[in-house]
Image (tube, rainbow, N blue to C red):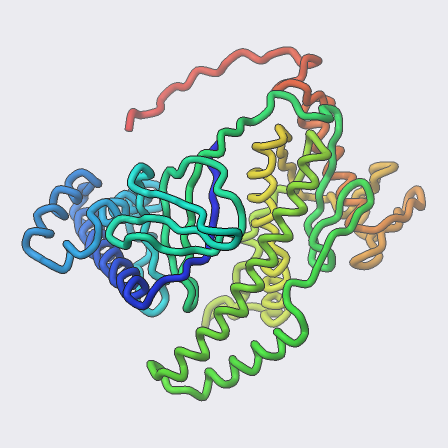
Length: 404
């Protein structure tokens, strides 16, 4: 099974400058190729990877600075642009020098060597960079397929894509178990078995320090050395917050998938839910400050990151991840199934107006989510991919789909 390992690099001054140069070259290739594809689209035709790769080889003979970087990381930058066909050429963003963190990928695993030096440190051999040291916080656990070098603030990282040899089990250890998960703002995760899981990703001291850095940044001149130092400190604080959130989501996902063969989530479109409510000049939005606070709370709890972590952990446990519609899950009684908005007295208390059932509002919603998930998976029989209690449906013929 393919998985990733991310380590922090300890580069020499020359290696850090070389990585910065590689990133700038890849950024220039990306922007030039993107502009070329946009120009072709304006004419009503496509430009693909094969044609641009040929032109890149010709450009390297004319421009010596392109020969500084390995050829395959430049070709990989062009391959990443193939997403234009899915997202649209004019929706793909430029890579600005100030807003884009340098990164490049070595796609050929056979050219990458990894050695462990001692208990804490290892080293990797990368093309044109030589041996680079990194903090080996965990075992590699497989053969390297590719390596991505990226910068976050002042620190450089290497992400190794490895094949750990594992495979998804055909049957979960507890095939009839299941859990419903309600993602919230007060508590990040509420489960149908009554658990509320949450943690703080930022300490009060770090939050106060970040606000002070924001005020300091507003008084500094753009492009100055002091402004860059302040931005570096702010990025380190945000990276620490992101790492804690990712660690929390991974731990919660591992625990849920290890114990349950069925994990049911609400079908939430986080990107749409966290859009700004500012509106336009002609039609300004309402309750903009309240909506901004809600958006920050949703993004701060990592709703989408938890879903990705669950899908990744399910590959190792054999769990089934199911998404159900979110409508009325917080207004429905888990006992009598009565739907009434008045039953939810406040954010944390649910008291049914019909039968009097009282529970934590998020736990009650998680039970409804689990019930909807079991109904959608044919009575919850997850020993096999489809239920044996349900008659197989005839296959549908695909008609009218054009060949790409």
